[in-house]
Image 1 (cartoon, rainbow, N blue to C red):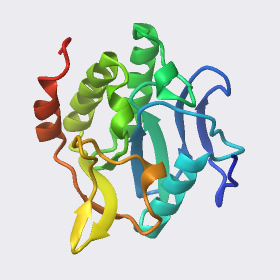
Image 2 (cartoon, helix red, strand yellow; image 1 turned 120 degrees about the horizontal axis):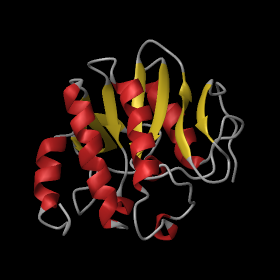
Image 3 (cartoon, one colour; image 1 turned 90 degrees about the vertical axis):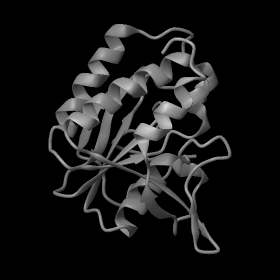
Length: 191
């Protein structure tokens, strides 16, 4: 299903077939969202994930949003990602990510969900992204549904929730990315 944009993106780097590096709306206070990999959204049409990113950013005081991904290969199903990482593609993704994160003190929405576990190399990519974000003093948050005064922003396996699995009234909380990466490192063979 395709969704209409409330404000059409004016940032688009990628193509509609193979890869998407950046999609977003320019502004002074962007919410930087990291998913696992891009799906169908482009500068003309949103998908469910990007519809939620746009709405949650607006409802939480951000004047804009930028969607980045741990890996830029387009696939509607993370199970269909390549079995091995294309290092050139990964390095190009890191260059685009750094060009946006170099504006210090940005807020990053950790939003990759359980699909981060589909390929071991995705966690390696996330470590590289974390190093860039840390260099520029970015702060990580995750969104979740509030239940009995507690925000449930992670899955049962402690991954930050994916936007398509959230209600529009999702609330943010700090996400300790360093603790998360340290905790899951033991499960990833190649780290």
